[in-house]
Amino acid sequence: MTDITRHSYKLVEFGKPVQPVDEAVAAPAGSEVVVRIAACGVCHSDLHLADGYFDLGGGQRLDMSRATPLPHVLGHEIVGTVIAVGPDAPEGLIGQRRLVYPWIGCGACAVCESGEEHLCMRPRSLGINVDGGFATHVTLPDARYLVDIDGLDEKLACTYACSGLTAFSALKKIGRRAEGESVLIIGAGGVGLAAVHLAAKVLGVRPFVADLDPAKREAALKSGAIEAIDPNEPDLRRRLLKQTGGFAGVIDFVGAESTAEMGVAVLRKGGHFVSVGLFGGALKLPLPTLAMRGISITGSYVGSPAELRELVALLREQGPYPLPVTPRPLDEAQQALDDLRAGHVVGRIVLTPSG
Image 1 (tube, helix red, strand yellow):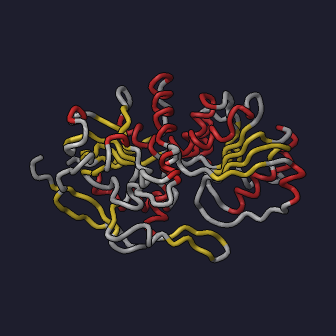
Image 2: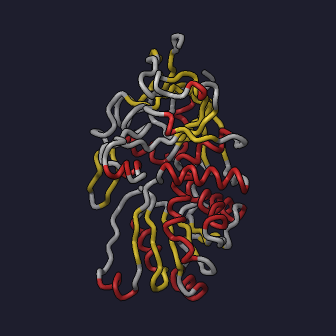
Image 3: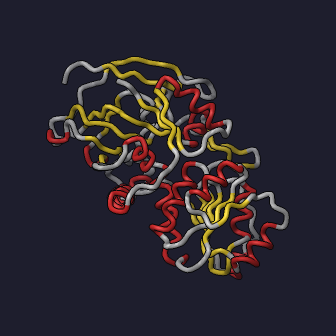
């Protein structure tokens, strides 16, 4: 491997803009692989990581500063080309274009051995615990974290590693119990729109969608939603319960107190609420109603390596969903974060390193 310089944008202080950094890429050892990045999506969770915490509501915060050592390269939705491999990795991968599975675990615990590395208690997730994709290059510990995306557009395919995978895994948690019934998706950002597109493929239904932003509601309708709802509509919960009989499943891609409360309130008996979003807050719920209504509440965090491969296989077979994607050069990484924080993004911004 010839000398390679990685150009990246690093978080050097929580709550401050990312800074350009150039440094040498170490030659891969063991089973490591080096990927030259072609596209990296900008995710809403990147904002929380840049702040150094997640808001838990009630004045409480989940401190991420210990899990995210500084200086640090954000970004976990990565597609690129393998340019170097360690002595224990397959040489045939060099020159191959691949999607990167970023939710890497320790690889040795019972959780990892069960196939759920994304739930490992000792994670090595790209862009969170180790350097990620706001860069020209990234190094992976093993080739098993690479997914073949032959035939798929790289600027869209990079979003499958987080937004697509998160939507897919959340929909699978509702499962076929929703077939022939009504499903509500709360939040029509990048992940929510992915779920709108995937709902028919995974659940066999077109969903209702709720979002405060008229532009996002319009995008949801164009993506296949039955109805796009303004959550501030007067007497909305009563209207939805009368119209649908209650939802079999609700997926909350916002994760705010108001959205969680609404989502649980409009479930039918036996319905399933899936909490995905990380906006912040707390859900207050009278405990007897869980048993009396027979509802279930599940958290859903990204997805497993097997689910990502299943998703990619599905999209290669049936065709990708047309998520709005806005490419931007890597040098606009901070502006992309600022625009996302301001709520000016429909779909996904994708950084495209030139190196």
